[in-house]
Amino acid sequence: MSPVDSVVDKLGTTRVDLFVHLWKDWGIGRTSYPNSLVRTGRSLSQGCGGKLVGSLSPVTDSPYRITVVCLGNICRSPMAEVVLAERIERAGLGDRVTVDSAGTGDWHLGHNADPRARATLSAAGYAHDHTARQITPDWMSDIDLLLAMDEANYRDLEVMQRAAEATGADIPALRMFRAYDEALSHLPEPHPDLAVPDPYFGGDEGFAESLAMIEKAADGIVDGLLADLDQ
Image 1 (cartoon, rainbow, N blue to C red):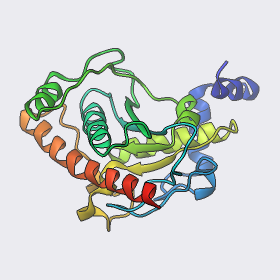
Image 2 (cartoon, one colour; image 1 turned 120 degrees about the horizontal axis):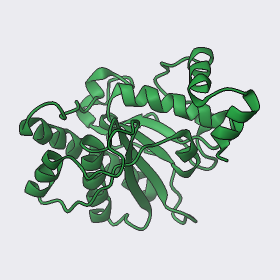
Image 3 (cartoon, helix red, strand yellow; image 1 turned 180 degrees about the horizontal axis):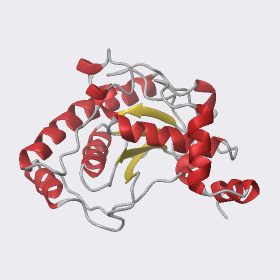
Image 4 (tube, rainbow, N blue to C red; image 1 turned 60 degrees about the horizontal axis):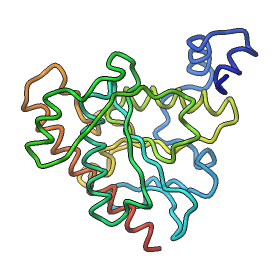
């Protein structure tokens, strides 16, 4: 039985009722998650664009784990995973930092990325291989940094953080992916202008625009990792 299911069983409720309870009683809408809830030994900086992503020591017993999250895990987050992983590898951090992705919904579980996302990545020279997954509160203790693609994803992840915290699990840091774009670093999180708009219902040009946004932010994330490692 998972930690969340254990709480559900003890309270005699359902997962949905538990989330609603946490939503009402804990409140949603803080622009940052308390540092006290970040994994022990890993501090969260509120800086953006080239500033700290999270505290990394020169020698670690496990890689720093990043999960990028969108709605269905077939468009934005798979593209962001590929780009960020490529930037991390290029920076020589492949053995220190891992990145994966997931969606908050279950509509596309087990599917490949959207054909337009794959075509956009291929045209830009990125190798890719993807299977869609859904993130749940049970994942929280295995992640160091959550990167949300839009404000709705951010709010959903806040609910999951609180559900995981209720079980005593470690809580990862939560940031907007584009908060690391230096040009947007003045915006509070989760500001709507920090979103990577969902291109699913549009044309090919929307995927190209998403990729451009992702690449700018990914460079900022890696700059932050490099700066942190140099300390």
